[in-house]
Image (cartoon, rainbow over all chains, first blue to last red; front, side, top):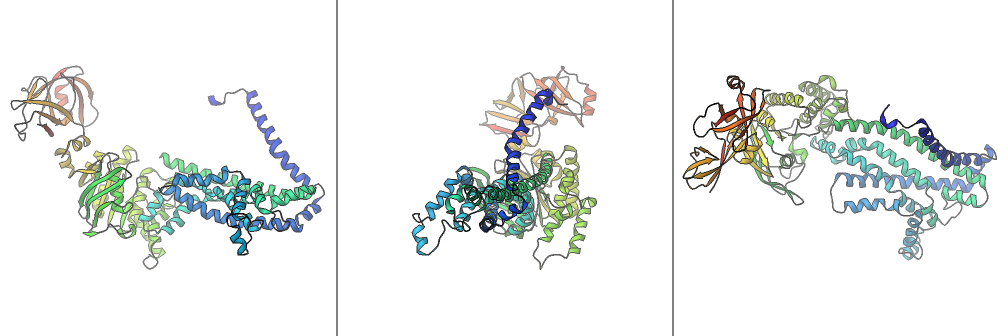
Length: 282
Length: 353
């Protein structure tokens, strides 16, 4: 046994005990309550609450929002991390800091920014009204706010991966006659695929679960501008606890699903990182 | 293909990586770019390949300006220091990559690509590793695969960046002899970058010694070793002893010793630095003329083809001397004994007026 592991069994058991207690109190118990409350009036009621018109509309809007925000951020994330990791240019550090802004700013403020930009009293408000476009208190604002909040997710996963890999393989491909596009498709993309998948999963989870920013710009119009998290709040405020928890269980499922995929990807990714480290030490 | 580099200048921010570098490589030559890190040798190689662009100056391939040519059209094979093998591809796919990415109208058929990759694998004597991934190969094997991959596109010029830099000493020696034989077989114009003087002197037809972004000397290994153009080249290519002497009335004094002034010295010099390689000394127990230096044996290294001896001279200077094993067995020197060291020849002189 290594010296680092010579603590007495009491210390070890106490530490493990504290960790377990925490997990049970803050993770397992709430999760259990979500599902227990959702199912407390039976499975039929559970499915009825999920097929309620407003809830279905909320699910639809959530899915549409994610379907637009995630691919856009995927493209942005790859482009930004490519630029940051592989090139040197002026303002690189500024770009790096800007990417982090949505993570350091409160989501409520993120939402407010768009109200101030596109709202009736906002910068573009009068112009938008003239042309008959409605952004705030409508799905476009929800999508824009979600894109804003989730845009660091992919880039932040990819930048370290790309930095660690350097330019060597791309340069090799180019000296072998590959075009820029072929180099990206056959060399860069396969090398970052696990990091990319991981980033997309996190981005999607955040896009579907975002509350604060979306709440500010949504207007809470039932069946029209509510995403799933907003719908849960409304149902809860209506004292419709079972329906609220039924909808919440969907998000909980999403979280569990994300966690499982994340662990699987991390597992795969770790094996590759290990190989990478081995390669370096040769 | 002959390559000509003319007055290349390259600056990174404030750092002048290459400062007016010119050189000419003849068709079929194997050239070593030798220098310490930061001397600009890798930058020069990358500019020739087209991976970097020069601030000013020209690159001529076969007498034609190639400065504006894209990497693709330069037809060069580049072998990277850390191999840069595609880690997610098998060895076979790595070598086939350059053939597969070609435009459809010039691309070989799958069968032909397969046959060609097999030929290349046997050329580098690694027929059996086609299905493996780069991480499953040893360093020396990876280097040879990187070479095979570069050769697949039938380059006219082969550029190698520190090809043996990250290998064990043993593998290094084997591989550089292999590279020499390989080059003699293929006759492809090649440049390789190295900071290891032994490697450059052993393998190359000609050596380009670089320092601080400038070419110090271009010549055969023999020329750069025995007739160095500068103190830098002299120091970089091997151990050397320095003697600082004063000149009085046309006679050179090294401490208490008197030495003959080299014939090319002008009459008005006041001091001279003499550089003498370790093998250019005789050791004897009796004084052999007035330029013999009295010294004490401090350290003996008997391992190797010659015997390396460290001596401390009366002046306090440490001398490094190398004599043959035969000479040593005649003398039977012991640590701590007093002897006379006599220079036979001088490699380089530096004068001050």
